[in-house]
Length: 323
Image (cartoon, rainbow, N blue to C red; front, side):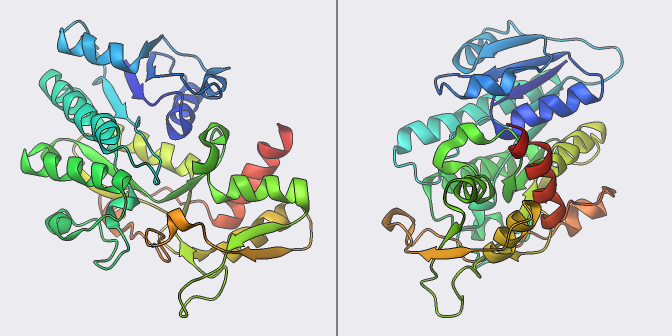
């Protein structure tokens, strides 16, 4: 049996689709469908059951969920969270991202289930201490938003309690790809830029407020959602691997590169407009992220990561253009 929290979300529903492609349908989706668009990610998926996220906590607290398998460990893929980087309700974010994670992790460990969870590149803050997934340096990280802090605190909790010797966490960088349309403003720039092209014939990118970065040359580490699913599954199949790992392409690319890749995928000339950065992002905006995946590679993970150009072409050609 495989449990996916946030299973109606972006990475969660894509992981369920990936498991289906492997012939696996013994999946329990844990989520809350208050956002009307999230239910669409469940259409076409094969799964055993759906459990409301709050009900799920009640069931594990009452020890009413237990699974036995003769061939493999139960897999708990904890991907659910309040992922808004502009969230301001600290109590709600900490309850969803920190407290919920602690309870599910403790339950999984007590049951000897394989536990893999989503951390975030937002834990690195502005990157003044780098983007190296070194657990010895967790204390030095300084997240710049509430979401990043909530994820960072769980990383620290897992380390302090010795859990990182048994579980695996992934610091996802800028994930893009199918099944993210429900995220609204928090969907990837690739998704929003595609829709801008369709509506206005151009892409709008934020102007830079730092002289060392030209407009559109702010850089991020873009990772295709299909690669994230492959990494998660590989970690499940290799339970001897534990700790926190970056989930990234491993090389930063500019927003201009991403925009050009979108125009190329649509066979259109590039047309980019630079607009002022919103006030609520000023002071929290990351101008550069680049996640080394050397630590992940050292564990034996060998699958190639999808290039930005190939990922955008796949996203546009196989999904966005067919909606």
